[in-house]
Image 1: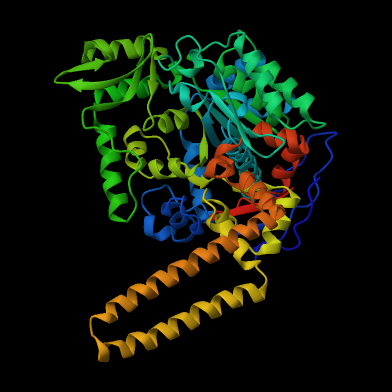
Image 2 (image 1 turned 45 degrees about the vertical axis):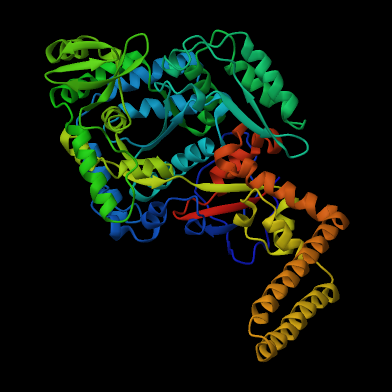
Length: 573
């Protein structure tokens, strides 16, 4: 149950209930209204300046994207462009229907997928790597943002809109997906990690098959999680999806679909070979214009840099935006008139014929993936993370090159979920949430110093002032006796100030020993907001929050989480 946050951090403004107008699934109790505290993302040093510019000063980056998502006219224009673009809707609807049958998708997800065959239907899309046990919290926040935007667009523009989650499992970066971090009963971060699977680090994640060792990893996760009434269901859902013999990509898709499919989320396994023929011409065109996509992205990167933002992607001039799938995922680059994939040299004609005959043997890189995505789907808006927003600003020319309508880009919702104890602590001591980010004790020392008895702090301050005044008089009169003594007096003053500061530090340490409760409260709040010094939403797994707060968390976020751009929400649970 969510408690209302009637007052919070002094620097924050209180934000009232915001309805995204979604309806909860049948027989699901609606969540309590949410009141949350807002933080301007520009306050956070770890947030790219581009995110603040995009939300508050879009005119400064205008021209790099398809339009300003704050402008209703941009939505209308994008919807019209996307609806008019020819694509094989029946075929992609069939591919998804087959995937859903294999995963036993819930009815709401199947009904949403069937609407893709309608020429008037458009989509809000988001995606993420297939992280073990559901990935970090921001995975859920991305999906929630997509569902809310789809419902908002349908309401505002009277058009059928579906939400799609693109499961990115063609990457071979095993280290990015193999671990899950939670907080234990003592609020200490605990990370569980899958043992390396056969082909890990070489093959795409979708090609990796779980073995019996996954059962031990789930047991380790269960031991790390604080037991709650929700733990059996959480562990049961993980065991059902991440089971021996299942593929890593399929496990993630199955789990996500069971969580959000009842709300109409369409989950798409992008590595499915059945979808590749639908974008084979994209692969062929990339091969016939080698390096052009990279050049266009590089030019846009220079424009981005000229406006004060470092480009996210700096492609090599000889690189193609394709990988060849051949016992691994091999980047393709030009070598004279030929191409090199891994250690193999192929002629341009041979590789083009291969792409036409066997498109499932190829995979797009970061520059081409959005083009593939929006060729398959009638995307009017993509929900992006901060890094994605940066590289998507380099792709307008690439979209135009392939004749694919570029969608609007919308930053995902960003939030920190705190329990009531942590929230009360921050409010009581007027700490800004970013004060918890440094992993030293500077903020704690400052807090403890502020709690010292007034007479102790005043006595120390008076002592320092009196010493400075007395020594100043000595420094002023000594030159009349011997000018060389002035330097010695200043050195003595420095030593005395140092000793007084050391005494002050000892007083702080004494306060720490006296007030262990304050230290525990600080550490508990810090661990929740910034485990290992990193933002919660990027570090803690979705499963931690489902275990702690139960399935009602999903209903709450879908109905009440504000998705306003440029704002981070601090929510009390």
